[in-house]
Length: 454
Image (tube, rainbow, N blue to C red; front, side):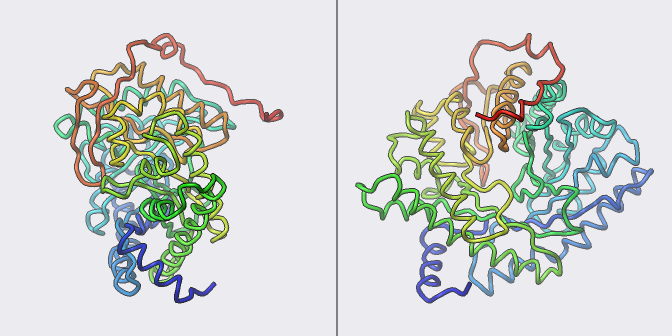
């Protein structure tokens, strides 16, 4: 569908005044043919294949920005889950593979590489266990590598043994990166119903059903949606609010698909999906919280916040589906607490609690994201937080995730500065009551019944 003059001028305004951007152009690379019985050979193959396919990614993205005037903020790589690739070598220490991924990412000039990943929602293979045990070392020793673990799904239930071990690994990762405020945990996420074409870190990876290489694009425009709602009459009803968001998402999605298809053409690969997710930044005017408050709550976290977020997320998905047949990934609204200036303020003001955040995750795109807790939080408490979030995803047939950061040496109400996109976190109080007996039980939470959905 061609663009008319009005749409072109409107898009220019979105870029210049409303912080619209392509948040990430992510090249997915299938690494299954890098499997080798020898670990060193596996690492060499992984490095060589990533560099071969991604060596022109940054230059290509920059050339699209120069030609079209469209800002492309991040250039990233996603790989096949490394637990699948590493199975052939049988090594119990997969940190060398993380180093190879990191070196390849550095050589290609990308900011992050995702795919240090395992799917364990029903059980663990030897390679899955090796990958999980390697996570703390891998994230401490690398700069660009991101890791994810799929702990639950609607069809399989929740692997509580794996979730319990993951909780301990979160604490170990925080300890190993204590000098950086537990920053390693910002590159680590767990999922229920993980999405296999997600271009956003820390969960970016590509599934076994993907092509040899594929370009997936993540578009973000909280500032554009905020500006559209600010121009709407304050007397407009909620249907008008939803329609405004939907139309804005439609325009953003069209632009994202244009960039994705052009990037794929220039790289000589296939275009996958455009993920139309409102992903905030710490910059003023680029906040999901601001949008929720424009819809009608005094402060994010107040009663009414969850329904406002549900309206926003649904309208974004509808607008994206109208604009493209290639919408995928997560698509909706992200609520990473430390990366959103409005969310940070809401936590500081006491409006947004951990409990309210959990309620909001039942209707948003992902889940508890970039949540800081005290560094001495017990593993059992972290398990409880993760398991609750996995249950929301499992029962509601949706993707949910947890990216939780125990900040060494910090307590509730204290602040940690990570800078850049990761922003500022106010350490939240997970409460004084424990679920240690739940932690001790282990086993698996069975999948919900599929025959009766009400």
